[in-house]
Image 1 (cartoon, rainbow over the protein chains, first blue to last red):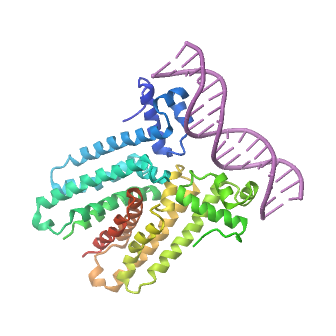
Image 2 (image 1 turned 90 degrees about the vertical axis):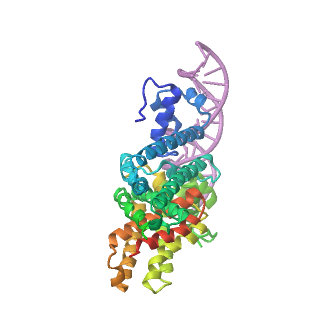
Image 3 (image 1 turned 30 degrees about the vertical axis):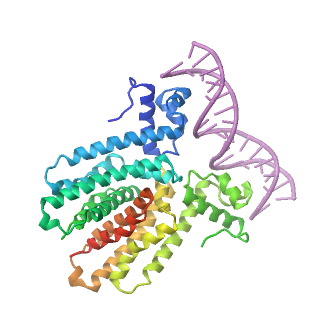
Length: 196
Length: 196
DNA sequence: GTCTATATTTGGATAGAC
DNA sequence: GTCTATCCAAATATAGAC
């Protein structure tokens, strides 16, 4: 968990509070006043630790990336067989999205909220999915190497692209429809990618 | 096109201006003041036609849905063969997303911006993709009927779900990566869905 | 590092005349 | 239906004391 503790430093309380609010309510819908109030800090303390609201959003995304990448990797590593590991990423989505109350992906949501294409916040989102793509490419290669005869026809770059599209779509579509089933059934779309 | 004309009524100018700004800049980043200024109307005229900002956003989404559903249907109807018609939806995405300067889907973006799960704006977004799902289900059924032996194994509901996930993912991932290639290559993921 | 108090702009929305 | 002028709350951010 990542719950705010009274023992946390002011800076930590601000970041934890903001992470919760930015994710659930969105970045622009969450005012600094609200964060300050809920974190139980003074206004000046807020801006002492985070000179702008955007700096806090950046810290939020960095922290979120670290936590999510770690959680996913731990989940993937529960399996040893390349086929199971390959499917682990998409199987992770449904429980993850449910545990997040169908609020979708903090990075995709941030992109929608930030129109400036040059924003560092958008860069963080792009990076997040580049790292995920790296993991998927690696798992795809492992799969091919485990049974070259069967999987020789696969193109790592093509599979990775489609896999990412399906992951993103599963998350975003589940949020829009407020229904986790699209994410669950997306597993079938991934399996179709590696059919001979 | 949907460009603002001097000859348009105040209400039309407001809606066209807002549609452009809401789409490109986002809903929350666009203030009523900015719309009023760019539409060239008085403040009171704005609130005479649209009692709240949310009412205007609703009109924007209704209009967007009508235009997009019409454009897509016209594109699909360029083809006669069920296979071509089936693929038309995903082939539409790349040129469409490019023509929108990689700003993604107005409905998905709105969902990210509106935390309230009961919002009418979220309902509009959900409805938009339900209508799209209806079209895809119909095209899938047409495909099956055109060659039952070959496509008998397909489940309309399952294919539709995966198709929607891929469409949503192609759009959202292209926005986040600021690269239209994911959308182009998503065609392959759709083809994989109907492999025997 | 943290506080209270304040500055300043922008947000959405209204009153009342024409 | 459209206008000018205005209201008030909320937005982000700062000054200066402890």
